[in-house]
Image 1 (cartoon, helix red, strand yellow):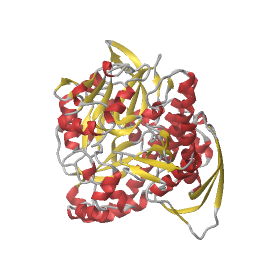
Image 2 (cartoon, chains in turn red, purple):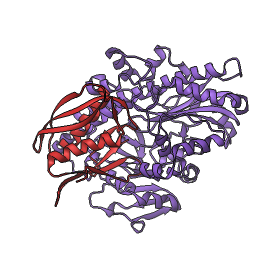
Image 3 (cartoon, helix red, strand yellow):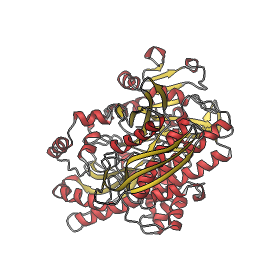
Image 4 (spheres, chains in turn green, yellow):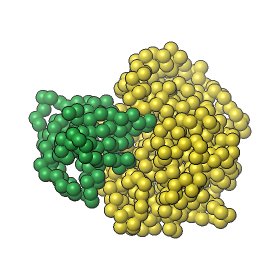
Length: 135
Length: 470
């Protein structure tokens, strides 16, 4: 199963993330934002772990909050995250660890994840989410 | 889905989606476009996004799409609408993440041929003096108290700290300081994100551009603004950086609950909103004003860096290289203004996203030397194409809540632009035309290729013909 695919958007970026279950969907959407930004890590540096605990009013809000959290962390700490463990996930709560390293370069920065046309849907193969991000 | 057949033609270049088109619309939606620009707008989500804004509580008159409209998120880029202060809403997502992204125009009194031998050196000096690109850090370190001061006083902070001249503030929208800003309503996260970014250009479509004045349409007005043929001027396009992005992120998230509490039905959660006159509404406005002040100060510090680059390159070699400010305008803002609606003057919150304020002559908010002329409106074109300086008119006040387009407007996705254009080829082509380019990323340059944008002259022609500026 592919992790995500880009969807054409006139001004910003949009992508469709996939997952066999919701945990994988959340992790793959996180992969998408770092891959699309062309974020590159300092391979020689020690791995960094960021534990993330979030609460939101519903699944869509939790999804946007998750991506927003990662965007804030990358800019506040100048880090790039390469894998994600979603330890617990409900409709409104998430606990996860993002693993990463200091960032050495980046082609493009995503300013924010938006709620615009956000769809999280169950499919025959699992789950998918369509997201628009501001660049 | 909206089709051309659903639109009423109000005038040759004014189209309207009637309020009856969708049951949730509270006002019509109006587009300023010729047939070709309208076809562009109908290709993507622009018009549906515009219709969505027309559903927001308290909207007055009609929602407006400028000729440069294109798909965004929530509201379209190039979208304007006004909500009553008394019982209307304010929507952070309809203002946008880059709060007070805007344009500043600086003018030298040197002629283009005089600096021609120094263009490459000037481009290099600008690139060195003005931090740009992803993750760029500013040259102005701020502690927490200083950052709060920037957030609450904007360009006045820059003036007190040697980054501005008094005249710069006179020639800045809001004189570079939005009133009502309160740094206590900006999260620590937003402050952490922006604390090292004052005086940075950022990436994407942000730029510093040295231009030559090629044509004057109104000699008296140009003279009053200090513009003349063959003159060298500089444009800056940037905004509130990570600080503004986080302010919007914070309040779009907070407002999800607020909209539910106030029982506001929304066609798009990105348009989430709260009554303007409510605790969450007032909190966002105070935080947005802080982000706007950060952006005013950011462009002011960049102007300081640009002046230094001009001095380093041109002092002693040519005369009159010093830069005076023509004007500085905001794109993504919510502003409390008074406008005539149904014959009565009322107070509204004008949401402009990818649109420019364009106040006509006589406006009391304009500084004395501009009051008889009207507000300068700065319309940058894409790389290698023209840019325009327009002036707000009585028409813009009557028709568009004193608003104008903000640029050419995109027509091509960034991924398609990168597929179709090679950054190095574009750089070489522009170089061959005598245009020096400095860019941190060649793929980033390709994304901003002229063919990814509409024809700015066509967009401006619409404005001149139909509504507001000349």
